[in-house]
Amino acid sequence: MIYRTKGVCSSMIEFEVEDGILTECKFTGGCMGNTQGVAALAKGRPVEEVINTLEGIKCGFRKTSCPDQLAQALKAAQ
Image (cartoon, rainbow, N blue to C red; front, side):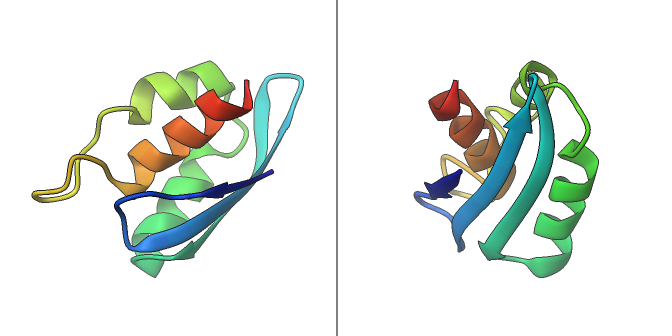
């Protein structure tokens, strides 16, 4: 799936879910080290766990963040 992010430096998240598990995750743009780290930590985990862990995280003064956008993407895909 492809999710167009809103309000963050990354522009897109590509991800795959199989049997409720996040199997692939790649951010386009954003802080490369941070987005790669988030993707690596989220892969292999249940979607609900990823959502519960990342939803609501903010980036500085923004109301969202790349991790929060991943949670929003997964929620939208359910």
